[in-house]
Image (cartoon, rainbow, N blue to C red; front, side, top):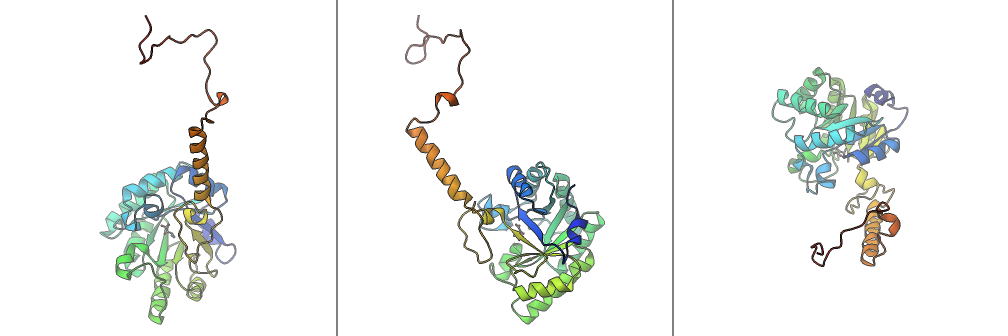
Length: 281
Ligand code: KIV
């Protein structure tokens, strides 16, 4: 049975929700077999997969391409398609069309960054029967106005704004809310003051669930020593070592062996070629 939006809602305050990003078919299979509840095809793919410095580089076409790859893995987990920068900023109708593109590509629901000022977009997407996940706190698509990747919600004003935004998104009908990089007590207060689950990243243990980027938790990406990331493997190190052993085997003529090559059927003889490839007369 596939995970549904109702399953996620029902976990509020009872069972921690596990969300991990994936951007392609094999990774979707891995995280699904690992037992996650939600796969987020996040716009972080611009950074960790495509090598850009910011998530702002992700376009609708990029997101559709990667959502499709993840959906083709037919995961049990709920698939969240992230609406990239400028896909929900121009107009409400354009927002709905873009949300629908992610659903047609295979997402079950969409996520968008921002608070109260995005309520008309959230309402319109919900009216199109598409469930919405909100995202507050550090919202990387706003990096140029926030002045960098900083912990949010550190002043009383900022805390009140976050709480108001969270309540507004929950009342509007979002089914869950990502809280990125906000102090643990603030995340806990928000979690306790809304009826929908919160999923934290860098926001401490008081949230209803946690999300990490696949490349960070598996050590597959570039080294990134962020306080809130726990690394469970060193995939990049293992992959570099594997490629190194393969290169050495090729150079030392240890690969391939006879068992790793195809033979000719009995009775077939090869043409007798002169040096340079011409058939001998
Ligand atoms: O795009 C993304 O991967 C995200 C997570 C970091 C929450 O938004």
